[in-house]
Image 1 (spheres, rainbow, N blue to C red):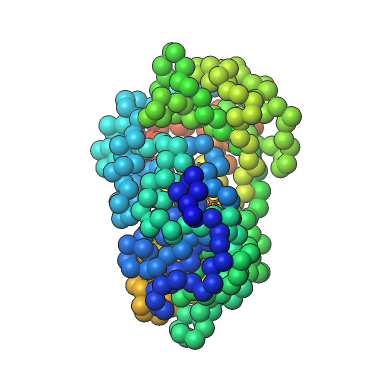
Image 2 (image 1 turned 180 degrees about the vertical axis):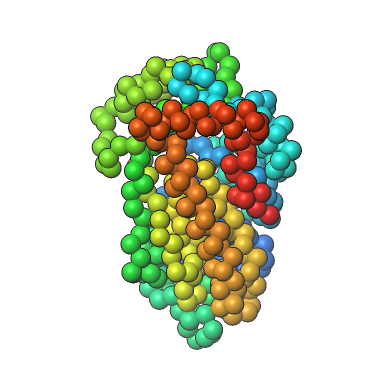
Length: 404
Ligand code: FAD
C-alpha cells in the first residue's frame, strides 16, 4: 500500500528481503541515508531504508550544495538536476551590518575555480530527487529501527540485527544514517562523548523575494551573522546565527530576530517583515569536536551527522553526508564480505570529515567573534586581503569544495 509521499508504511518486515550477501538496511532517510541507499542500490545491493518519521518531509527549509556535493551527486545520477536549480548569477560576498562589502566574489569566479557554483535548493527537492533513484518499495516510513547486534563482518553466520516495532531484521550491511542524535553511534562507540554545544544558535526562514533586488551575501556582525540567498523559484532562504548560551528559546522568534537584526542592511529588514512567526526555525548548534575512532564496526557503517556532526559555518554537513554515501557505495561490492570495504570507507572518510569538522568550528568562531576590537581587526583583515586577491571567499573553501 502506498501513502501520499510515495513511501511504504511500516509493515511486518519478517527477515530482510534479497539474496544473502546483498541485503542492506539503511536507518534514516535524510540526505546521507538516501544518497547511500541510491549508491548501494545502483551497485546491486537489495536496499531497504527505515525512517522513523511518518513522511520524508525534511526539517530545515533549504540547503546549499557546494561543488564537492554536486560532484558526489553525479555518482548517484542527480548532480545535473541539482545544477539546473542554480540561482546565483553575478556578484555576492561578505558584508558588514551597515552594508559595507568586506569581500566580493562572483558566480563566474566560482565556476572558474571549482567548475560549479554553489546551489541553494529546497531540502524537500533534494530528498525527492534522491528518493526517485530507489525502487518504489525501498523506503519504509513510520519505521523506527534500532541496531541490536552489529554482527561480524568476516563471518557469514553473524549478520547484523536490527529491531523495529514489527519484528527483527537481519542484514549483511547496515548503514546508520540516523542523524546527530544517533542511537547507533552510542551503541557502537559508548565511550565517545557525542555532540556538544558549539556556542551558538541558528534561525532559518523562507520568504518571497523582496521587490528591491539584492546580491547573495553573508553579513558578519558582533557575535551574530545573517545570510540571504535567492532560490531558483523566487523564494529567499535566509539564516542567522548568534553566540548565546544554550537552550534559550524566545516566545516569538521573529520578534527575537527583529531585535537582533532589524537594523541591518537591505534585504534583512524586508525579509524579516515578510516572515511569519511560525515559519521561523531555531536550532542550537551541536558538533562532534572529538572524532570517532572509526566510522564502522562489525557490519555497520555510520555516516553523515551520526558520524561527524559539524557546525553549519561552512555549509558542509549535508555535502559531507553525500560524499560519505557515494564513497561507502564505491567501497562495498555486494556478495562479498563487507569487512575490507568498511575499513576502506573509514580510512577514506575519517581524516577528511575530521578536518572539515575542525575547519567548520574555526570558521564559526571567526564569524561569531564578539569583542569589538577583535571584530574590527577581523573585518579590516578580510577587506584588505580581499582587495589584494578578489576571490577570498572562494579561496577559503580550497581543499573542501574541490574534492573529487
Ligand atoms: P539527518 O538529515 O538528520 O537525517 C537523519 C534521519 O534519520 C532523519 O530523517 C531521522 O528521522 C531518521 N532517524 C533518526 N533515528 C532513527 C531511527 N531510530 N530509526 C529510523 N530513522 C531514524 N549542510 C549543508 O551541506 N549545507 C547547508 O547549507 C547546511 N545548512 C545548515 C544550516 C543549519 C542551521 C544546520 C543546523 C545544519 C545545516 N547543514 C547544512 C547540515 C545538514 O543539515 C546536515 O549535516 C545533514 O542534514 C545531515 O544529514 P543526515 O542524513 O546525516 O542526517
